[in-house]
Amino acid sequence: MREHTVDVWEAFLDSMENRGVSHSWDVDPETQRDLIEYFKMKIDAGVVDGRTAFPTDLIWNEYVWRFPDEMREELTAYARQVFETDAYNGAAVKFLAIVTAGVPYDFPPDEFWVLYEKAVELLPHDVDICYYAFENASLDILFEEGIVALERMFDRYRVGEKPTLYQWLYRCCYDYLHVMSRPTDIYEQLDRDDPLFDRWTAAFRKMQEVFERQLEHTPDHWHTVRMLGEILEAVGDTDGVERVYREAQIVFESKLAQDENDSEALYGLANIHEKFGNAVLAREYRVRKNPSLGFEGVELPDFPSGTVDLDGESISLSDYRGKVVLVDFWGVSCGPCVGEIPHIQSVYEKYKAQGFDVIGVSLDVDVDVLREFSAKKGISWRQVQDDGGFGGGFAKRYGIRSLPTPFLVGRDGRVISTKARGRVLDTLVLEAIG
Image 1 (cartoon, rainbow, N blue to C red):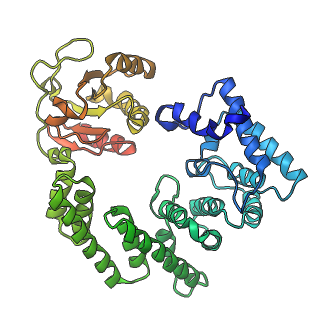
Image 2 (cartoon, helix red, strand yellow):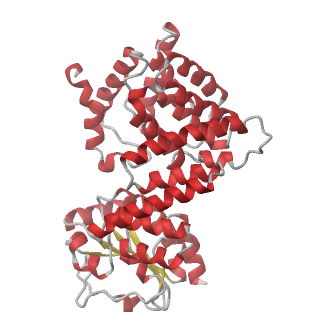
Image 3 (cartoon, rainbow, N blue to C red):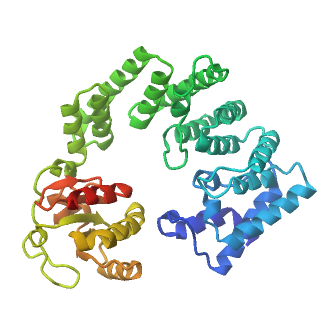
């Protein structure tokens, strides 16, 4: 085991369906012992050259909260024991800071901030813990804790870690799933006479430099363009915002001239034109990137003649006229699709008696896998399989470029929305059934 520990974590993640998208894991006893030994060894190693040997994923995706309870409790107890005997073991205190922060999206207790202070003291070059502190500070918009975490993030990164710093700041600015309030959200709530205003402004200027450097290397990455634009907008540099978007427009148009289906270029141009108030052009580019959007507001074409469901029964959209129907394009191997199933099941059970129904259109190649998964998850609505994937007849007919793609169809057969997911689905169905 000890000869192969360096590969244990990655091997475990690779063995998980969708690399662990679910909120909790069922880990077999043997694997659990391997992982416990792996993390104990990382804790024992402490701090090397200002950093710990923990996988970055441990913080990025809050994987520690997907561990089985007994595994997390054993590692927490071990980290506490190590920390009590060696107050300079930064790996132990870092693990404790992560665990003490609480269940994801619950605001961390005071003990977290004590451990965080200790961690950044013991980890002079580890920006991970600073990012994690900002993430938790942003849960309740703690202006001062948030800026302290950002300032220390800048203080602690080393020149050779610029890409790492960019990745952390990118998540701070863009990742709505983990950082509940982005820096721009916090900054916009500060008064100019607030003592923290100047500190936040200085932090934004440093963030601006990081994003500008990154943009030199990836001028065709829309999200980098967007975040730099939002930072400049926050600090009141309107000329800078105009410059960034205009330069990006040239880059994306050049890419599109080389490949008319370039997804990043189409997405970037759609957002740029929306930013400039050109709604018609923005929609044109969005539909070119994702043709399924073009069906919104119009009648959805019926299934090809002869279509049957998994039971071999004939099925067509015309059979559902007069109902509100979710036509859900999905796949068993698609993590977000699987994540949507509980939402769909909840809405289905809630409104099926009032005229709501669901049709699943799976792009899975293996019908047996589809049947087994559907039975395991208790999916009771009818399913159609197109084993041609994105090159199959259904995907081409309805412009499917990504999964999941949900078409919410009204009683008159017209598409209400192609974004009916999560809580939005419940709201739209309630409106549609009247």
